[in-house]
Image (cartoon, rainbow, N blue to C red; front, side, top):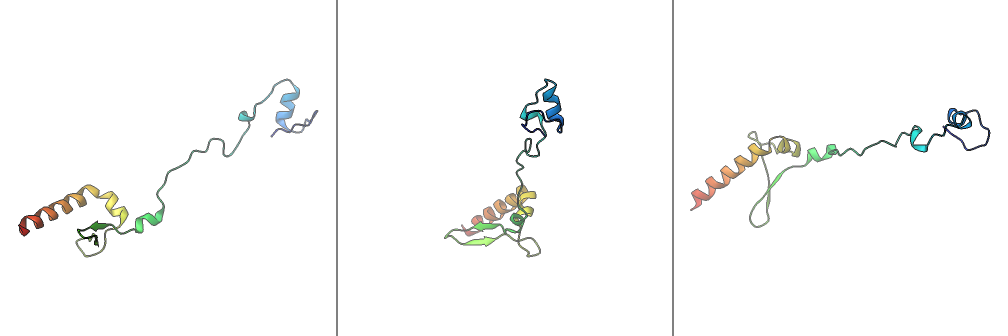
Length: 98
């Protein structure tokens, strides 16, 4: 820590300055100087239920094989497999309807 009183010998930075060595403010310690913003996903996003948009604006939740809803974290972890299954089911039902 440096103060700006003339003749101060209490602080280390002041003693260096009195010897002719000048420290810039960037050389002094600071807690927030090198903090980088971390991008994280809030835990509440994992509770979101994934919905499938149907024609006419209806929203149907995606279900697991045991009948429980698919949560956001599970969808994010298995996105390729879930999307492939959704595509396969849509193609099978459109082929049966024609």
